[in-house]
Image (cartoon, rainbow, N blue to C red; front, top):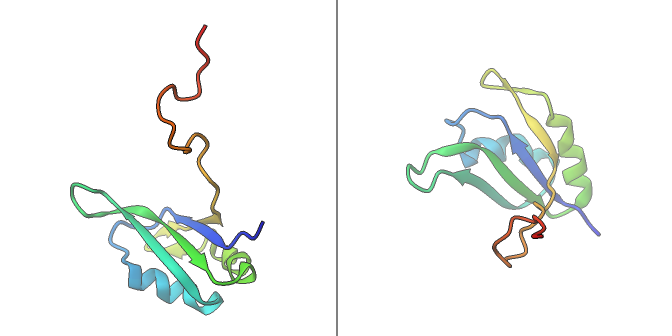
Length: 97
């Protein structure tokens, strides 16, 4: 399975999509950048997902992990699916006796 999506977190809430593109575009073509925002306030939650056209670009972008952005160390790693996101609802994965 090709993995070309990264998670970028721990950046200041003031960071916008353009700033993230400036940092990550040099690694390769960005197909999608999803800056996660609070649905009530519209303010950034301090993390995003970036999908690159090529897996190699995503892997190379991992070198940004730990780099300073606005006084905070960036957290950059390969994105993973959250367990239990199949849309079946209920239960939270707990067994019922």
